[in-house]
Length: 314
Image (cartoon, rainbow, N blue to C red):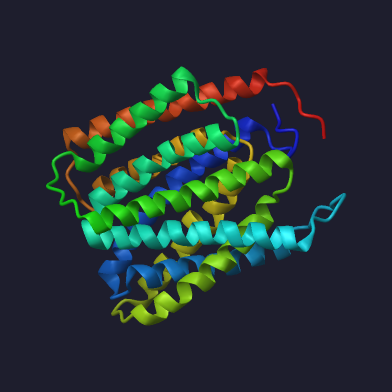
């Protein structure tokens, strides 16, 4: 069934989000290869990811015909939406990188991606009146348990308060970005293409001074390999994935969005074993299965709920 405001079927929105979560997971493996091939830092990589992604999105918009709109949204409202979404994206990425540097990858990942669904579920209930339900609650709990097992299984993680605060800040930025996208999608005030382009523009401007301070141009003995890796990161897990994310998040319940995005660490774990030579452990297998079952259950519940909803008049 289609969302009456955006015209995008909920089932297709779920598919967009599944593809997004899977492709986001490839960014970590690609970033690891970037770090091996050069001295590029995390903030510089994040800036180039958004800046080149923005160029690719603009090129893609120029190659396709623009649909004719019945009414033009006021410029101040469009600017406010772009600023809010872009700042949320910038906080999400930058605070997460800071958390990784402060308290390590395992703790930063489990707090950011674990707190995200909880904050989003609470925000959706209070602000959007979206009910999670018993099945949804069990799916979120199962996904968080799988994330904890996948992240902490067999690792000696160190928890530092500053890193925890940065991870919670990152989760808050992710939550704000998701809730705003859903809110504007329900009211018909969001265009996924415009939202993605302007969010990337704002995020690139926010990250530029940090990237300049860290070192914008890396040193490498393998320039061709580095270039291909940067192009992949900018094209697939950035330009393509965020375009699909903003389209899908506008028509799917916010809590469902946050749980489906937990496919990111699942994909990253699989690629770490297949491409980076990491050992497949019982914790990796158990955590992956738990999260996949939770994501599948919540996606089925979302699709069934969409089929029972009455059309919203336009």
